Length: 138
Image (cartoon, rainbow, N blue to C red):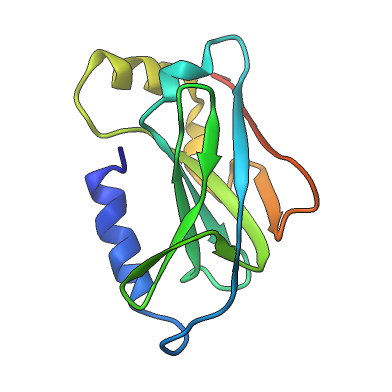
C-alpha cells in the first residue's frame, strides 16, 4: 500500500517535468534485504527513489513480503511502470498505517535509511544488473 503522504508528494512532483510523452522509462525491479530480521516486516512500506541530477524526477515502489519492489514513476498525471534513466538515491518510506506492522517496520529500519541523502542506497537506471537495497536497524 502506498502511503497517503507519499502519494500526495508524488502527485505534486509529477506535475513538473517534460512534455506530454515524457522521457522514456526503463523497468526497474529491486530487492530489499533486511539485516537481522525477516524482510516481511517491511511489506506495505515502500521505496522512494530520487534522481540525483533532478530531484523532481522520482520513482516509487511498494515492498512485497519477499522484499521485491517494482518501481513506477508519475509523469503528466500518468503512472508509468519504470523510471527515466539516471542515477537515483533511495529511501525507505515506512507505511503510515497505524498497526503492529508499522511498529515492527520502524524498529527494523535505522533512521538513516529513511532519508535518501543519508541512506547510501544508490542505483542506476537502466540497471546494469540486480538492484539490491540492503538496510538494517543500525
